[in-house]
Image (cartoon, rainbow, N blue to C red):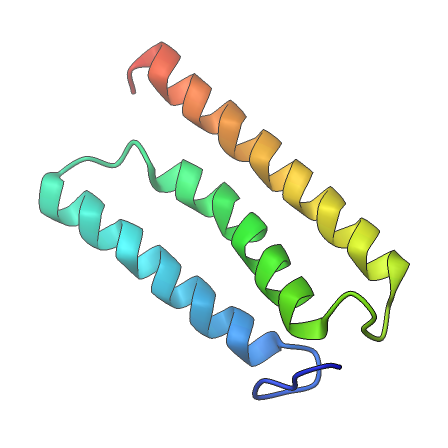
Amino acid sequence: MTHQVLDTYYLAITLLITVAYQLFFFSIAWTLHFDKLTDFAGGTNFVVLAIITLALSGPTGDGGVRQIVASVFMMVWGLRLSGFLLFRILKTGM
């Protein structure tokens, strides 16, 4: 069973989630004058969106197995990117 949230392709909900997620991390960076997690937040945003859109469409959604595989690859890529950026920040101290 699929759940349509604002539009068929979840573009509006992903926009809202991305804006809220990025504003949350921006508020932390602004308040603490600490911007070392902003790149990490950008990478994990992809993971969050992949999980949410997969959960909204359900495992038997319109794409079926293809959607699950694409979502898993997106999560792995986002985690790899976030891990690399976090490692680079911690290593260089910048």
